[in-house]
Image (cartoon, rainbow, N blue to C red; front, side, top):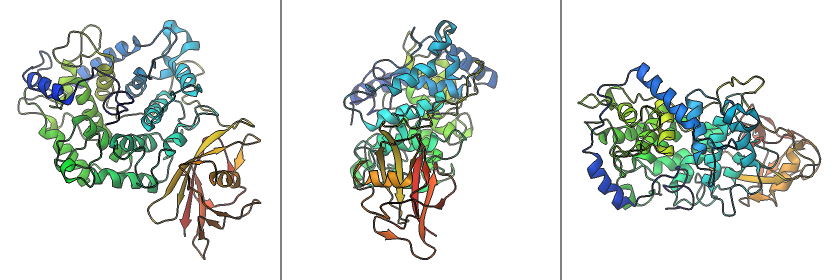
Length: 480
């Protein structure tokens, strides 16, 4: 697995690192531990109290400079938890110093040329996109130099369509799907075309294990891996990715994932018995997956014969007073990442959430840079769909001379400055502002023509002179 980014092959907030062998040993112990609280299914009032106390604890994780993200951007997952709990990131500031509010500080961190380091991987950008969205930062318009959606697009695998990053690291594809489907436009509309999401949904289906769940590594085409035990955490995340992409919770893949999770419930506590033992993080990810799919985590499927639910287990992990959550039932102190996962899950959240309307006077719900800086290179996400079901996807580097650019300039740049390469191999015409008649050798014919959609909006005839703004996700589709 790729462990060059935070824990569990990326995207996972760092927690105490354990080998699988050690985790299974812990599981044997943890199963025997019954929480001393939560002796019945949690009530709405109890959940509300837990959420309030959890948010109070998460606020203590903010540094004096206003940051949640430190080395490796660790505690940034707090933004998804805050949003799910109804707390706007811009309203969180140390000592009420609004100049150090969490959203502004995080946006500045993501905009810095030094972020995310010398050897970034796709999950760095996926994690940032999910949390930027929850913080009220348009992930495609963080700054004129930072478009997280385009960065994710740059990891598309032309030789393995539907995957982002090395196919062996399946989690990179799952979190790409979560970020691209969940990180909608500021108006709440889909940002990318459904055809792009569908390509990765197909990949997800091919990687589903025979027990109904998923794991962090690729299993498709490998009978031994498909028959291997699934992971609680990744099953929750993958279910969320499917449902965020428009797959119904009645779909056979989602139902199989649900049944896998159900089979792992521990009767006495309501916890999921993961490969790391009964723990808050795994429970949080599983519940967030159920939340994203609209499946009650305290419904008939997830209430044990002893009357315990996953929410009961999470509440039993919370310290009173203090509001933080322990990682293992035997722990004696709260753990930041466990607390983040628990608050997000208890608050009904998936892996991102629409940012709440701020209470800070004058603070907008969203922030984002909307114009190019003349002479500065920016990136744009581009999807070329010939209608065959296998789109070309890339990030295109453009250097406009004004506040906007044109589709023609983007297509011209894509022939030489796209990642991955080969996104646009030819186009016609190659100059002017008129109708785009051909891309990659596919030429307009009768009613079948090239059409342009920006941020998955209404499609119109593609013309070279069409205006393109900073952060636009550009989709060109051939058809009637």
